[in-house]
Length: 481
Image (tube, rainbow, N blue to C red; front, side, top):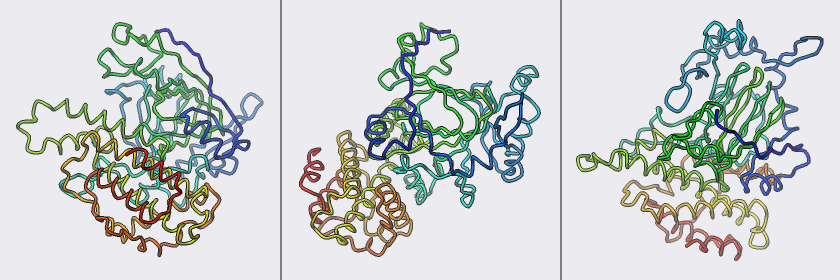
């Protein structure tokens, strides 16, 4: 086994003593992990999914597997074999919840190893999407600014460019999951999808987390920077991974009814110390959008290099690169650009609404207006970065702003965005009335956007025309030109 040095602890804090702005400043914008308590007291999942048993004269709470079998047993789920590696992850199979529980119930972890039976871990169950009427939990306010899942309530992340058909094999319906596993199940070392934030709530059981800060992530890759260590508790070949012994890890134990916030780019490995059920979300917003773009650009460069030898004989080399990027990363430049274009338009619509409702005096310094302004500014910066590397240069597929305003899916996105920031900033009913959406005036701006340069121009014209951002915020937007 390699030398594992632990040099940091994850802070644990009662969420009731923390304001939203304090969470943003101390953890989200500074990209620091934290364990939060006191957020799960009224969750239905904590009642329905947990069974109290008396063992050795004391009460112990365990997963209520019979409840899952009775109510959700026919659901098809992904199950990982924790003892079998397949490429960079554990081998996965699809089975019903009933089949998974039938495997779990008769045997303990020790019996699994003695009988050679695989130790199975149910992962990435899209429970909310499958059972929308069953409200298992309420997303805590600290994690509500979730652009990814708000967007996926209306759209899919990837569309196969050139065919116009959505590719269901690549796109994902949402990033809200349930995990279930016996004591001893685990997840290999990884950084989260899209380099998103994540939060993980323990409904039942106990987890051990081991974290590596982003500044050290290069130390867990091989000499070529291609392959990552799979299990930090294995014997690590120092000649293959020469930086591993320089790593300094953070560790923590997450108990029942605790939620851990996992920031962007922190590699982590997780072990279930007891039979465990958890609820996990992946998400991103203005504070970590740059992480998403940086990953896409890096993976695009790798995808392009990998097939460089067929460039001269391929009729649509760039299209092939983008399809491979979507298959490997979960989205490509086209899907990401559509995402930020729709999102920036929704934010501008809401600013326009605030301006029309509240007039010119003082409205633009309200917390909700500043939040929309921050969102627009972050998207503008990413669009400028995309422009600087020639992303989507020569793209002929356009995004029509006027058509988008009349689209029912876009209206749904606007309503979801309004509800979110109304909740965060305690401004009720923000964005529930959709009649104002079609009132947005584009002036002389072209309503069709093909490239990041077009998007920057649209943002600048919309802000200037409506005069809806304070001088300070307007300067912030223009500072990145």
